[in-house]
Length: 277
Image (tube, rainbow, N blue to C red):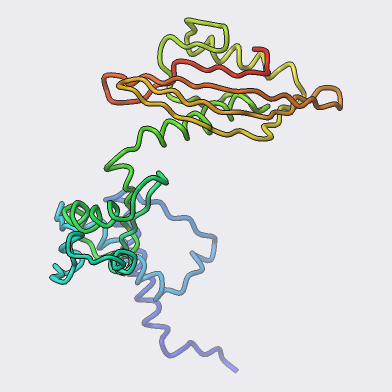
């Protein structure tokens, strides 16, 4: 019996040709790259067609420079209640409703600092965020905002930098491949006036003495901020392993910061008790 082609084979072939044209357009005009096996992408041509049309529409909107505010993307709603109009007990529900409205339009807002008050977050969402401009495309899920990028919290930011990008990087076996934002000069325990290269060298020399270094517990206990200086202090418990034996050491640690002329907090002082560097 002869093979019979599906009734829509002609339409599928036209879709494949249109898909190839759109992919070529994306490659030539936008630098896109496509990878597929010997039998093509494996996608249904109709699904691939829809996807490529959306990508092209997004790129064309992006290139056009047309913008719309978050308020416009929400449809210029007239029923968003200002913070001052909320009665006691209404904030939680109003905040949930604003999250829902934004999420429905693919707009997501989050916070990093645990100190952001719900009232301040609602004020930000209903006032400042409404004026932020977006690409005019209606593609979903494309807009993510972090409150802290608009209103940085140096206490929280420096605390996380001290713990995760400084003390934790020193108290582990892996080499210091990337560093916290370093100022000049640097201090490391009793070593003063170090450059970044010399700082790394001393840390690597410390690491090389052990088969493994395990940060059991690292905690920040206090963050002090005064003008252009900041100091984060905490405690650590660390395992230093050598020849099948691990000794547990503990002590306090301190990380000092200085605010530079560009508004960036730079690490200038690292002191860790319980280890020899």
